[in-house]
Length: 345
Length: 269
Image 1 (cartoon, each protein chain N blue to C red):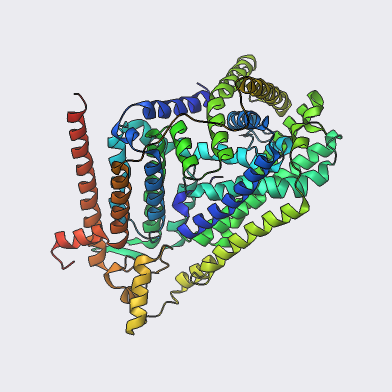
Image 2 (cartoon, rainbow over the protein chains, first blue to last red):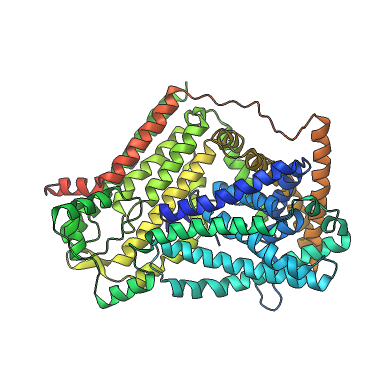
């Protein structure tokens, strides 16, 4: 499932871009060093293949619903993880730009969840050991299924962590996780079935594409050292970003308990320095403010506070919002009229 | 029309919009990329309960859409159809977050509904801006701009190839799908048919890549992709980036609607 800009905070979105950007930079450097120029058109065409394949559905046995391919794991099997990451990132970029899937800030998170995790976690750690030399059809099927499920479970965990750390959704961590994991178990099984069906066909029709002479074999393998380095970098980046605001933000569960029981942890600080800092933070903070609708919070940052139950503020917000919309639309209309007048020259 | 045809139609229509000579298209693509990124970061940096404060930002995508003479209807339709994930997750907010937050006379609105509204506004703004960016720039120019902004060429070349061959392979996949549908009297595709069908498409993709590679070699391909498209940065672009950044900063720092509302109601701002 695609993460969306609307659910992300800038810090989490930025951290995910950093992690995905690092993985992409490592992968593209690896490909450049490899210098295999056959890959340029091959990766492009396989990206187009995945793009089209994602829109072809098949019936899921015994359920009456249908599913389709995601592609990260299949690409890793065919191209190796580095090239696969770049291909899947390009597919996600086109989806973000042309189909409004997610958004530009969330693209970093989506590349991480649907690209880095299947390519650098599920493929080398699950698929490769299970599939062995890819000679046995049963082992290939089992490996593809398991790796797809593992990859998507981690992807779902990624979505939940990113959303909860961002603090835009009110869903507490555990509830959200219990919603997402079963759904993604099903999606993972579908992904596994689709991947296995295609890989098994290729194995029968063109075993050379999977075997020692295939494009995957000519790709740089993933050495344990570089795998460890990639995962460690991603973990440090993510951990750093998450812990950075784990402290100011109570975890979702605590937060909803606090809300339910009516206690808030924000106490009013009235001395000058604190108020000044709070004001500056409120105004300049690029983390969404975690100001809760409590009297204390509203005292500490004056009229900048939205979250305060105050009829005057509410009404002013409503009236001002309508006025703003009117002004924005009016300006837009004016601009358009001017443009119309200029254009038929 | 199959899903693939519809998707390819979408790609084509946005590219056609970008191919026209409009004020938006004449801007340097790098300026548009930078301004759009600044816009997205500004939108998501707002407090989770911000709704009215976000509204002035709608001026950015609207103004650009007008500069680019973009039609409203297809873009709005895309916006509505776009991934409902944010909306689904957002819908839990009213259920979980019930503290009253806004009061209008006797009626009150809970914090959850306010943050849900905020998610909807955020979604419309960020996704709208991305659509306007691509409809006013076009994929080829956008990739040149991304390369010039420091994105590795491996990535941008991949994007260009994907975009070029999405039409070719998409059309092939759509024909194959149609042929199967015509022979299966409305039954959904079984997994036993899916593997071979997609497998054949995949093998043809491999062969096509091989032919493309040979054609590229015959034309002197040496591993580097060169573009004749040039970008020219002018004063207009500087003004564009600085102007919009100043606007974003103003909206971020001053709650204009709250201020306007208080002024309109006669209270001291």
